[in-house]
Image (tube, rainbow, N blue to C red; front, side, top):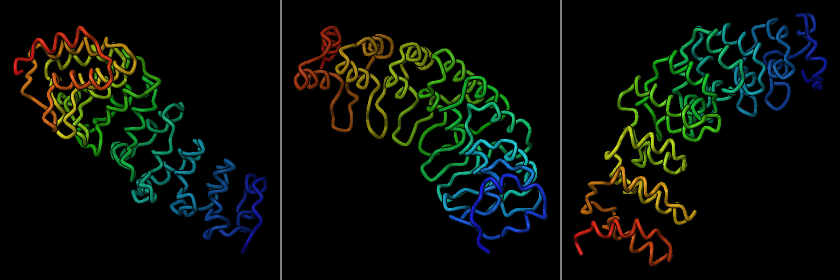
Length: 313
C-alpha cells in the first residue's frame, strides 16, 4: 500500500482507527517507516498507539531513537528510551557509521542532561562506544559540552579513561570553545582525581595532552600543564619523534611571537639532553640552526641559549 506523504495528516494522527490506514511495518518512502514521519512531526501520541519497528533504519541510517535525538524531539526520545530500556539491541543499536543515538544528541541542549539523569540505562557503555571514524559520545561531550554538563557527568559516571582508540577522550577539552582556560584546568584536575595517570596518556602518534595544549597557544593552560608535568614534558614523542618546544618554536616563527617557546625553554628544558634526537638524528641545536638558515627568522635569545648549551660541536 503506497501513500502520498502528507506530514500534516501524519502529525495529527491521534487514534488507531486512523493509524491502520498506513503500512506500519513497511517503509513508505525513502526507507522511512510511518514512525519516522511521526517523529519528524513530533507526534508522540501516534508513537504510543502501536509497537512500531523503531529499530528499522531509513535511507539516512537512522532508527527511531537516532532520528528523535538528531531532530531534538526530546519527549519522544525520552519515551522511547524508557520503553526499550531493557532491550539492549535497540538501546545500543548502531548504524553503518557506527553511531548510536547518543552520537546524535547535542550536549548543549538542556534536555541532554535531563534525559541522561532520568533514564537508568548503561550510559557508560554508550558514551565509550565509537563510530567508524573513532569518535565516541564522550569525545563529543568533551568537545561540545558546557562546563556544568561535563562536570556533572564526570562526577556521575566512573568512565574508563584509559580505554580509548586513537586519542584520549580528554584531548577534546582543549578544543572546546565553550570552556575558558580555568574551566579546562579544573576539569583536568577532576579527571586526574578519577585517574591519576590521565595526563600521561598518549594518542596513536605518541602525543600526550601537552601537544594539543601547546598548539592551542593558550598561555594559561600551557603554564598549567608545565606546572603539572614539568621536565617530564622534555621528551620526543615515541612515533613522530616530535617535541613540544619544536612545535612552539615553529609557531613562533609563523607568528613572530616566541613567548611560549621561551617559557618552555626556561621551565621544561633546564636539563635538556642534547644527545636525544628525532628520527632523523637531529637534536634541538641542529633544528635551531636549520630553522634560521631555511626561514631566515628566529629568536636570537633562544638561539644563543640553546647553542651555548650544546657541547658537541
